[in-house]
Length: 215
Image 1: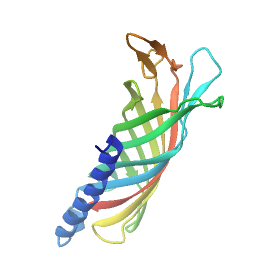
Image 2: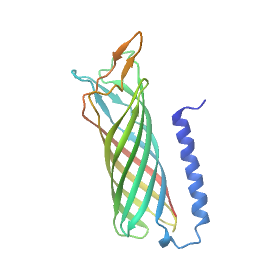
Image 3: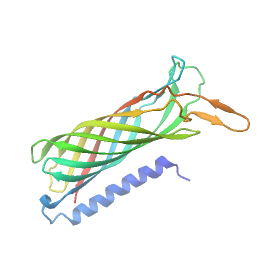
């Protein structure tokens, strides 16, 4: 049976197909009438460290690919509301580099709302984006949800009226909690925390690109 990350990647590809079909069907209308933009994105995310409370060690997230969807609703000519969903599946490893140290599987899902401010231009539009919301983090044993935010800078390229390209670099910050059971294992035979998070900001950086479909 396919895993969660494979299912989400399949939905990502389905979204591209659906958006392409819908944008093609609407291409006869004036693009100025379009208020919505839907952008399936594919990127690569860097960084992320869970510090172990009371020690100088940490679990570091491996750099890995990410996928997501961004929905924009035009507010004014140069501002948009933005709803962001992004997902990353990766591994966490101990920074000390202990041999045979098992990797911890990590799945991160981000859901945030905010907006963009766009510069002038018809076919090339630079923009700033900022969102806030939550990040749900699942490990091999437990899961937890934390407050998070992001800020990004990018460029929108619209060679056609309804289909274009969006490229962006974005920084994420997640406020982790020291009392989370994210890395703990409990049961009749064990009650162990592999990591007690130190309650600091989990910072990550991501670059991504996507196809913009206007409706």
